Image 1 (cartoon, rainbow, N blue to C red):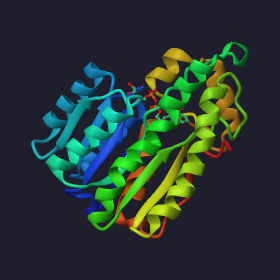
Image 2: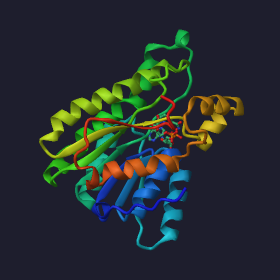
Image 3: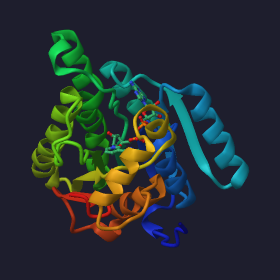
Length: 256
Ligand SMILES: NC(=O)c1ccc[n+]([C@@H]2O[C@H](COP(=O)([O-])OP(=O)(O)OC[C@H]3O[C@@H](n4cnc5c(N)ncnc54)[C@H](O)[C@@H]3O)[C@@H](O)[C@H]2O)c1
């Protein structure tokens, strides 16, 4: 898939991406970097993240991309990292809340601690990243926040209630914060990926039979990749989507 759109409003803007080291996040970091944004991302996978930075810096000496190791379950550390990025690069104008963990779990064996842990990775950081980044965004005249939801709960997938519950809450977060932050010209939207075939998905969950089932459900009979997600994120990040807030954007090949 070739990406051709260039968004001049993204040039030089500071963008912050959670979970940018691999999967969809790595594609978002790459796409934002190629738009000449000043991209900062956090992840717990140091090897993959450093390799991504090296790859993008080799691609062009103009690329501005940096990584900080940060476990986003640690709210203080996440917010401090955001403040550090702002101190060095100015207000974050694009925040992409991408990181998550879709580990499967049997509803009968979920403990209160495990439930809290699912929220701590899949829901809580999205709010606290917004809380840290929004004041700077407002002072800079506005910005775009892109929260990652999921098709899983919309198609009633089982086997991971802690994940589907958190992901269902993301759009409530988007809509509530879009109202609170709209006065500051900050837009908040949700991306709903369908089945995006990453290495992790293939390693951990998706068998050839699953993929055949997924494609049978999709209107478009093709494999969806991270490259299909990035163009919509770029559009929502850029000023070209200045009238778009509080909504969901599906990249699901028509599954839902
Ligand atoms: N791939 C899909 O089919 C699919 C479908 C629906 C929704 N989504 C959503 O899209 C987003 C990206 O999905 P993906 O498939 O690329 O996910 P992924 O699991 O492949 O990648 C997530 C990234 O987040 C990082 N990460 C995990 N825990 C972290 C932590 N505690 N602190 C910091 N970083 C952490 C991982 O190291 C990884 O680089 C997620 O929000 C996911 O829920 C994906």
